[in-house]
Image 1 (tube, rainbow, N blue to C red):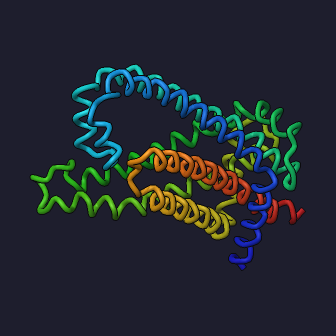
Image 2: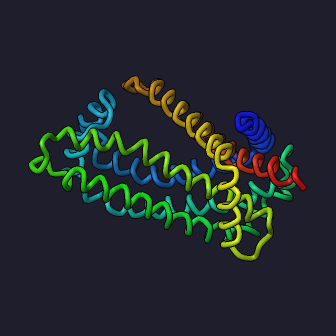
Image 3: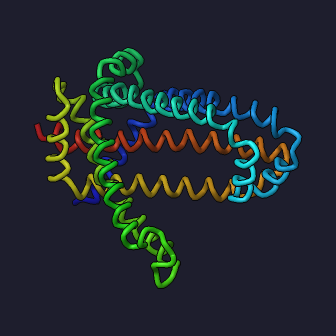
Length: 296
């Protein structure tokens, strides 16, 4: 029974994502502009202080590694401070932009699941922005608490990452790779909860955020197996996409053509990654629609 619900909701999410693919292009454009603004000062730095250095040849032939980064930081580290500060601001602005899109996305799913409507998308991006922002901050705190708990556990297991206090330094790596999948599975529950909170926030038209948070928690408590199953399915698709990207991009870009090809592949990866994000939101809305709206 749960399998049929997962398949039905996933198909509904895929239909929503493909019908509103224009939203992915908007998110990609925002991503591209933010990346360009962050990378342009870095490009100027390379041209001004590293342009003729043999380190660039080393970088292109073997890619980034710790030795390169350490040498580069020793020689040119001071110039990176202002650039990193600017990049941090751009990352914050980019995240705010992604939050801005959320109200429009879930409004499209609610009112026009089979087609994109600009008159629905853009006004609702603005209408729900501050609610979505408060919702995001609430879950940011939760994610921070979960991450902190796992970091404290890891710190205690590894004795503060001190090889001298451990029987073997391999414990540092084995503990990390043991805890990482556990953390992903646990954190996924809260990321899933966040998606359904967005669904309830738009569907309920509540003035406050907390009712949507509690209503979504109640919903996933009742429908945990299909909801979590769908989320894990989308997560596996993400890891599959990431693995393919890393495999394709593993060949060292030591020629101009390979660098250009690598850039092109990276842009495809970003678009597909944003598409998976839209799919994840669409499947949450589809399951809600199948389980709640259809019962009325």
